[in-house]
Length: 224
Image 1 (cartoon, helix red, strand yellow):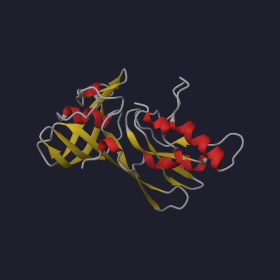
Image 2: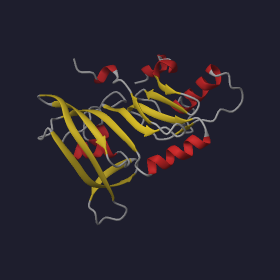
Image 3: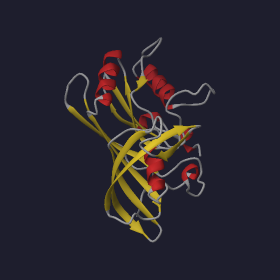
Image 4: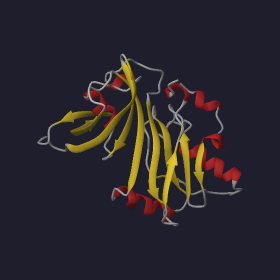
């Protein structure tokens, strides 16, 4: 699915100042370049800054975190090296908060719950493991069922740790794979999956104020 090619970047901007740029990434787009000469969010945003802010020459812009290609939602970029350094420190020291919405196949048995697992990954896939396995890392998330009907549900996910494909594999392990995520047991979709980074909370690297950035759900994830 490549409907994002018809979108304007200016319509996806969630927050911008001299230090930061936050964008609502469309599902199906890479966050950063892969070496395949394919449109990616970082280069798209860099070109927007060059044109919109009239900045000839090289433009500093670097993603503070990434989203998988099929995932949509908030991606935060640093516009200066100082902002990047401070934001990376905030991420490492867990001074940020991430809320996701996930549209899943199946309905969890409990309205609210905590998933605590150990994960390993390789070959572009994460797997549930035991604590004793080499390189296994603890993964924790909290979920709340927002809406449910017969064989599907919309969940709100509070990410406590940030592991590779964590939400995707943990929800699959719960018996509720994310819609479209055939890699983790769901029916094959169109190149996007029902996972959206809804809210990022972080301390502004210069103003030192709490910044809460929200991204509206894509149309295909909205429940009437």
